[in-house]
Length: 194
Image 1 (spheres, rainbow, N blue to C red):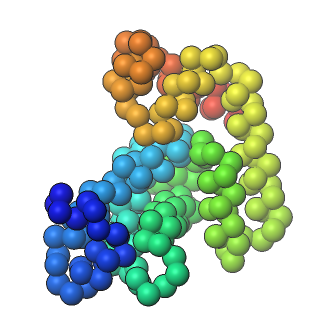
Image 2 (cartoon, rainbow, N blue to C red):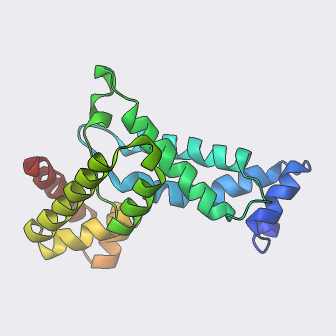
């Protein structure tokens, strides 16, 4: 798989279409971190991040399958969009009681990402709901910034960047247990906000 590192994704996709099937595995592995980061940016009340990671991987698979190299968008941009849409579609389409945690998600992603993602969904939302969603995300971010301790803010940002408990503990010079406790407090404060 190392032999693909220095080749552009768009060229790899062309080679994949020509029958070099190992490229699909390489691209899935290469972008797995991006999927995890996006899935962690969603907080599921009573749910599990693994569900969103699985949905994101489906979106990535669709990107590998459907990307057209002759289009103007890069593969990375296309993959970003496919992953986001798959995760949001899973959240939106889970109206049954069995999937109740998916119906009560709280986005913890950056405002830039929120804005770009929501712009891509304009055809599915009316302008009023888009504006309300943006205001809600902004209010949540401000409230969390105000109510989280400096440690909790650091932990939250590192967690959203895709770092695990142990990595965060090493970066901040804390124990994994203290990081776990901080994340529990963060979740509790978010639930209290709602």
